[in-house]
Length: 342
Image (cartoon, rainbow, N blue to C red; front, side, top):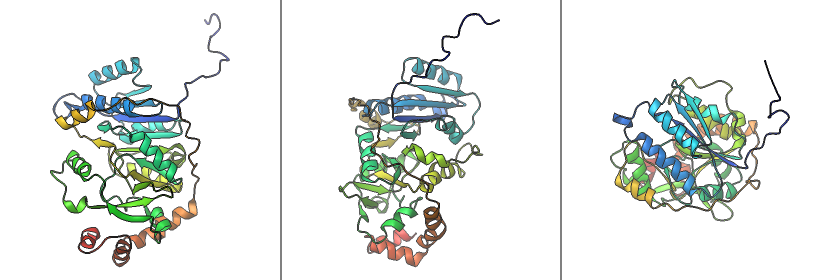
């Protein structure tokens, strides 16, 4: 039997103001072997993003089939207000489905989706926001430039700036960071040909962005996710899941996929090394400022442009003679041509 009056009845929802949400999918099934450093790395990741952000953030963590000891630690972080939203799935539902658990209800203007093994550096958010401001059509911006991403869902950029000097290959700003990224994914080294030049786009205010990016960390405008598929992903990891849920929605809204010219975060893998601790310990606490990001352009669906770039122009881009002509036009010369055509 109900007695008394529910104190929540007729009360309006009051939520603290925030315009930037960070989503961490987390899978740590044990704390041994491959995963022995995983939770410590995750702690470094989440604390680094909080410490170095310049706006107030809200953090969502989706534990995707993690072990009980990890879930208990997450509950403690939630109780200590490090985590704003914690979703615990006892069974592994896959990386993308974990992200969707939080993503489908996000209200914040900007959404950063990141792996749990990324170490964020000072100025990462400042530089990402500067790219959004300088390039109104930016739909996703990563704080980490990655080699050879110039053809990764970037046909709309190529088509728009094919005859513009704003789009060209430039010298890599931070080659050592590219080497560290390569090692983090298991490459013993990175050949010089992968870290000499990188495709860039220059804005009216002279801001330089790298064309294309990787999925492991990226900040999105909220509206791009209006184009999410209705169904859940069929894959636990890989397959076409990242393409369908994180790439295609951006370009369906006419958005550009870009990265910062310099490196402002590290993908650190599953093993802690001394240089990572040095970078982490050197981080400085940033002063947080409320920012609504109302000055950022809102993207809208562009079906005709999407069809033109993805179904027609994209095919021309992979045609070898045309590709060779394009590369020469954009600054690739001599022997470089052969390495870019492979």
